Image (cartoon, rainbow, N blue to C red; front, side, top):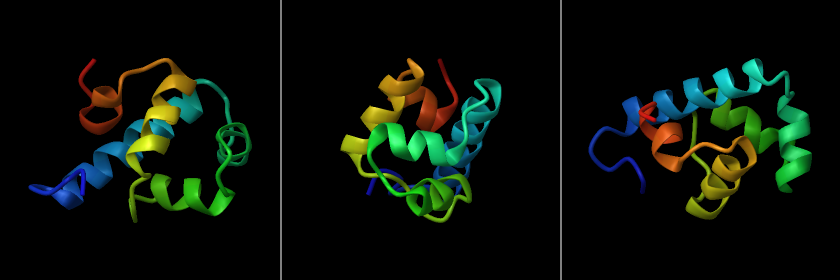
Length: 77
């Protein structure tokens, strides 16, 4: 698991950062899901902080938004 030490905090940071990116770029959860090849429900639970994407999908999300995986996971650029 990506967030072995602080799972809840890590989930919430990822959820917040993903939601901010979606909002700033005016992209819907459904559009992101379509563009990276996952279900809308998957994006929805990530944004709700209920679960995290796999490392492969996390990398796809980072590339999609042109940010680092570190930014997604910690908020640090």
